[in-house]
Length: 206
Ligand SMILES: Nc1ncnc2c1ncn2[C@@H]1O[C@H](COP(=O)(O)OP(=O)(O)OP(=O)(O)O)[C@@H](O)[C@H]1O
Ligand SMILES: [Mg+2]
Image (cartoon, rainbow, N blue to C red; front, top):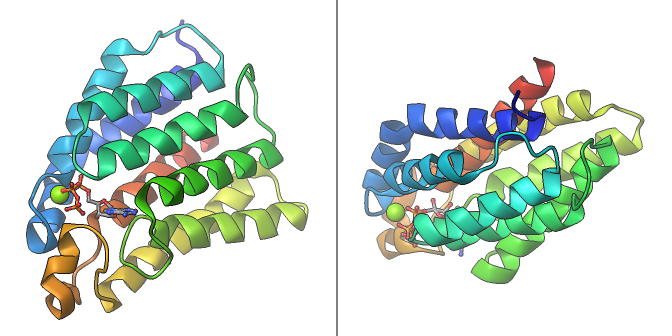
């Protein structure tokens, strides 16, 4: 039988694969048409390499991050790679997560992305979905919500973050070359980040 963390990461891999063309088309509009292809290649490798029966969440995330780092390329490889590895450090040795644990993991993932990519909120990147999602998540948990309820609210904010990226110009990555012309297009990375959170939510809801 496979572990829950394996099944969750495999579910993310499947959603990325299903959305490969969609993500690539978004990146065609403001980038170099490789986001879906990059991510799908990385998660295909993750599914191949991840041990199916190890319940250690931290170990699985570390392996996922290392694999993404070495197979995805582009900007998103190191960024997502770091995010998974840093979230994995928080979850080292854990086989279950509390709502607080998940919040700490999200926080570490965002910090890793920012350390590596030097971007802030409002630059039309994955952070425009992840940061508002994290903020809402922690507010909900502080108010007593459980992981699923808080993540539900976080996903809503992540989707709003995608909409927000349509209204702003890119100042990081290749999309920044388009300057004003990047307005009107949604950011591919904000989209893949939102799909990731939504898949975790769906997985947890069973
Ligand atoms: N400095 C950064 N910080 C956070 N996210 C970033 C940064 N640069 C790019 N991104 C995210 O990466 C996504 C593009 O990923 P992709 O797999 O297409 O890599 P890429 O083609 O090398 O990227 P880019 O052309 O943006 O440098 C963007 O949509 C954006 O969300
Ligand atoms: Mg690209």
